[in-house]
Amino acid sequence: MEKLFVWGIVLAALIALFTGSAEETGAALLSGGQAAVALGLSLAGAYCLWCGVLKVMELSGLTTKVALLFRPLLRLLMPGIEQDAEASEAVSLNFAANLLGMGNAATPAGLRAMRAMQKLAGGARLPTEAMCMFLIINSSSLQLVPTTLISLRAAAGSAAPGDILLPALLSTLCTSLLAVGLTFLVQRVGKRSKKGRAA
Image 1: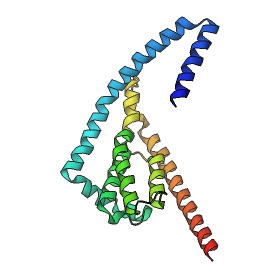
Image 2: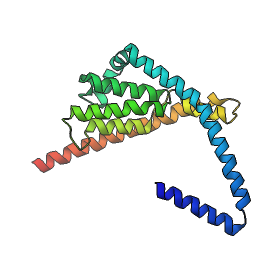
Image 3: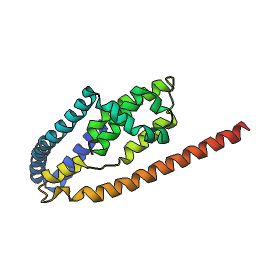
Image 4: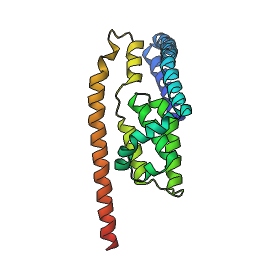
């Protein structure tokens, strides 16, 4: 990735030199850097808030209650995970963060959940069905409140940054249902093919 980034910069500089737009390119680089810093600072407040909320949930024991709420869903999507307290709490915290649209805040809980599921599988090097399902759900990312997107729209000067709420909910609901359905289908086909080979 680093090499691609470096070659991209070199290529852009060469094109700017040969097309005679080096001055405009330099100005665009500076203004782009300033805009990136300003955007990062404006988003930092939202991230700090929700990361703090998630940490308070964890320290207060609220994650255990959230895990209990998610238990029926975990039993359906990832059988066996709900029996392990560490795995179910980490998965539940990750789900809660994603539902709030805080993908970056969900990452530490997601990594902890993967480690707990690997431990639950006896340290297996290949991913289990539960791990695959967890990854698929994270990728499709159902969002009740797309906090990051709303923050980006507000930072860009949108008059109504929250207008994205319903479209984001509907689109992520559709992608999540489709992703989970296809994962169940692939897992079922895989089990049938294993039974066929065993017979």
